[in-house]
Image (cartoon, rainbow, N blue to C red):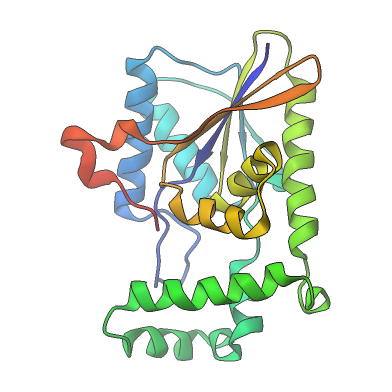
Amino acid sequence: MPALTLIRHGQASFGAANYDQLSTLGYSQGERLGQAFAEREEAPTHVFIGGMLRHKQTAEACLNAAGLKAELICLDGFNEFNHEQVLERFEPRFADRSDFTKLLASYENPHKSFAALFRNALLRWVDGQYDSDYDESWSTFQARCNDTVAEVFSKLGSGDSAWVFTSGGCISVVAQALLELSDSAALKVNWTLANGGLTQLSQGRGTRQLISLNEHGHFTGRHRELLTYR
């Protein structure tokens, strides 16, 4: 029975000019993830990544720490949704990077305030009434992520295992489909996913199953300082 592990990327660079790169902590999360795989004596037969830099950087940090070498097979279907566009359609001031930075700096708690704004922006995107405002609608994003999971399983033989380095949005809609969750519940799942967390799927006789969701025990104990969600 083939198995697939969806791995959320390490912490990206929130507030930086380029969000799509790991923070120093994000690299440490990737390395710790690799150590955990080595401790469990786990190794994949295939490694897939989305097309974003943070996916590639997390995969490289993880594999290096695990002492593994593998070809990184890039599938853009595992990319995150365009969060910048989602924000800009909700609040046009986010389109200007300098205004965005000033807006964040004006809040007493930038992370908390940004999270509230982002939730509202996501709700507008998911609503469905404004699909024409976006290059990729919520329903198209859902289909894209689930179709790419199906594509990976089609490449796996019996007993094969794949690691997929992707983003929280993709993981949440894959879990949504398997658990038959509402859109609002899928968004809640998204907000609980840990950087470097693991979600495991299996497939047998054409039936896909969710084995685990958001495992992050490798960030407990003396490694608990590595646990982040954003």
